[in-house]
Image 1 (cartoon, one colour):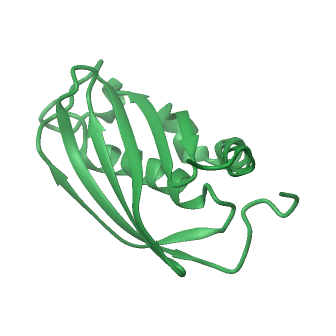
Image 2 (image 1 turned 90 degrees about the vertical axis):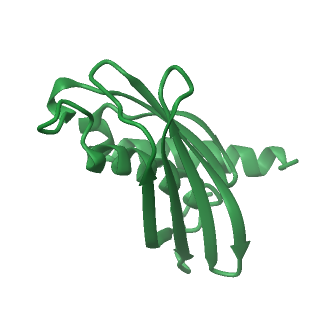
Length: 145
């Protein structure tokens, strides 16, 4: 169990990152939960997110997962960047679906981390599995924490 201080830091990081994430705002992504090494974000699929087949564009789903990945990786106040990410799609999302991306850190060893993100719809159907490898820099996300 994480300490109250670690949870407070994670929440402060979530607020700070949310304020400056213009792509997340444009897509309507909202942060639901953040804890050290964990984050859950939500997004409603809009008509302008659909590809030529009338389903949610894979890049939109990837971006949702990447946002959750970023929150989870940076939740300890170490500025952390993606080294590599991959995604596997298992079902389609359609207009009106509410997608949830849940990111869970699997490994944190020194500066390197591995985080898995599962994207589901409102019926708990898995839409995609995302895995990201991260690199923690020597910088803080928020200097005053």
